[in-house]
Image (cartoon, rainbow, N blue to C red):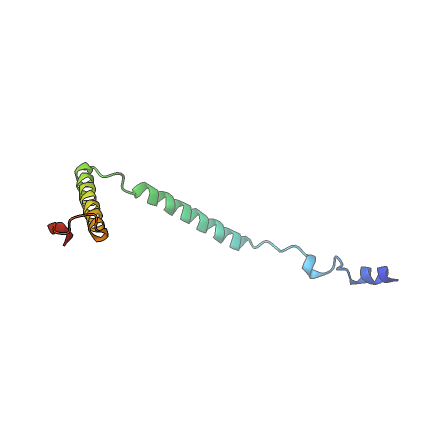
Length: 94
């Protein structure tokens, strides 16, 4: 007797929940057009991006590296002075 009651409670084919969603072609067209516009804009943006600089930057990089090495050396000396491993009378450690 339990089985017939379960069959009655099961959804039937006439229930609107089981109906497929109707296609909205205008929404699909808007989404497709938006995708196409964004794709074209991205390609144009990639094309107009500047390439590598025309001038040589080796001198600038070398100067920056030397400056960083000097700063690292100074910090190392200061840490040695703080730990008591270096002479604190040097001018750069004051």
